[in-house]
Amino acid sequence: MIKTDILIIGAGPTGLFAVFEAGLLQLKCHIIDALPQPGGQLAELYPKKPIFDIPGYPSVLAGDLVNNLMEQIKQFQPGFTLGETAETIQKLDDGTFIVTTNEGTQHHAKAVAIAGGLGTFEPRKPILKDIEFYEKEDRGVDYFVKDPEKYLGKNIVIAGGGDSALDWSIFLSNVANSVTLVHRRNEFRGALDSVEKVQELKNAGKIKLVTPAEVVGFNGSERITAVDIEVNGARMKAECDYFIPLFGLTPKLGPIANWGLEIEKNAIKVNNALDYQTNIDGIYAIGDVNTYPGKLKLILCGFHEATLMCQSVYNRINPGKRYVLKYTTVSGVDGFDGTRKEAEKAVVKSID
Image (cartoon, rainbow, N blue to C red; front, side, top):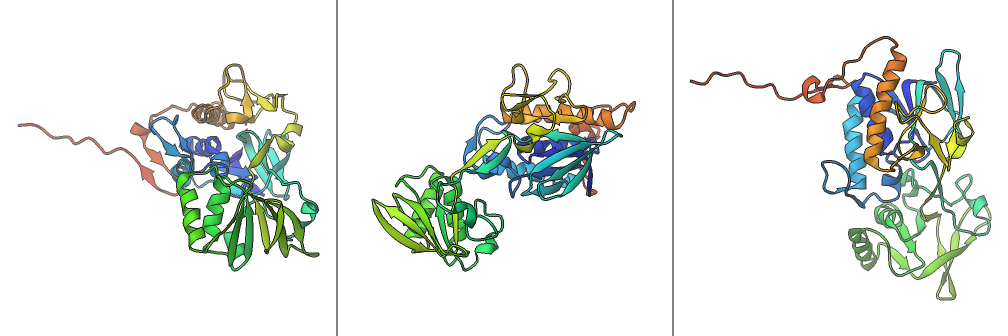
């Protein structure tokens, strides 16, 4: 069983920043996320899109913001349970919680912070006959690229026209035996440099591009051996070991909706006058997953909510113990890994 002070559900920017604020209070964090990597929407949907409303950054790519947050919290050594969904919660007599994932992984925490953005993400699946059969037991349909080495020497067909489809086509062109990118339009909605890179790889024969086209069927009795592609009314067959449709993600509140929390319009109601706690003592909701009067779904608002949540958890875990807030410019930052960051000391010197 994994034990921690704060169990954070959601590895988006708000959840990641909460690790830093908790670390300043010497509180340990562990994060659960249904996606295979940290970053939430920023990493999965638009890693190369610029964000313009992060203080101190006139412009920052979403993926770079995630990387910076991961670097910022590294010193506090958070744990991660990735690719699993928080499914059930049990509140013990001592006020602590047991949270179990869909894979049976158990977590014991003194407080729970739900930072699930818009909820858990489920892949948008193409409507294709027998797709449910092929998506199970490694029969050839994958919705996420969890381990690129899995595709080493394989023939891959990717469908989609956004950043994820472009980026994974580029990456896997150096891993797989062949990569075929299928899109229903000639135009792609992705970062310009990615589109240009795919064009270069197509010209070099490292990516086969099929547009405008759609995958319309599968071949293979035990697992996929090929897909049928419709191009301008005609059909062609592309041999492949894996078909990866990357059509984005659908947000859902998921099993959390059954935890007895007060829900309003698919969001969790919290006490914003104090600490963003839910109707269940010890369970908080921060970021886009919560709602309260005047709520704004902005990353910077999530950062603020995470800060106040951590202060509340500290008081909950240490009743009667007063915490004196010190600015990091004065106190420095002591990491759990033994590192220390602090401002340079002022030089004391007389002037003749």
